[in-house]
Image 1 (cartoon, one colour):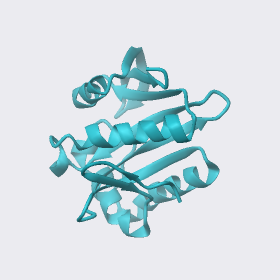
Image 2 (image 1 turned 30 degrees about the vertical axis):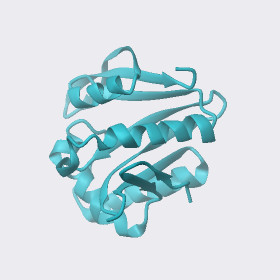
Image 3 (image 1 turned 90 degrees about the vertical axis):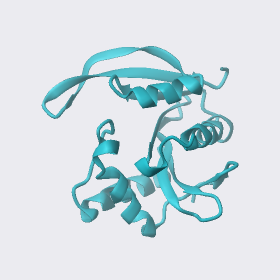
Image 4 (image 1 turned 45 degrees about the horizontal axis):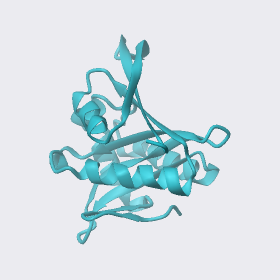
Length: 175
């Protein structure tokens, strides 16, 4: 089990089997998967994501949290670190939020908690975010959190039969 993280309005906790419906709701939503690397067509297929969360935790290659409202415990999204490389003290950061909770600065609250965990508890030095070039909301969020734009990987991934550019953002423990 990963550490529970708390902010003023949120609790970030380990995933539970009962989160499957919400994970499917999020990762099948066109507004979320528009810029997200994976999607699921059925609740049964979304179980693969739940296994992915558990396997990363078990193998210590990632740590992901269910993001919930403090008090009610309502699931609103997910965020975490993956591709943790202990040799280089670095990891990749990712997150998503159910659309009905957009515009409430929840990610501006959850992301620092995850980053602090990475820097302080995992002793990471570098956390990177890979963002599709057209994902302006994500880029704005990372800018507000003082991530540094490092550059663009042109035609880096194939999505819906079209090559897309991926922008690289990073934050260092010394920033």
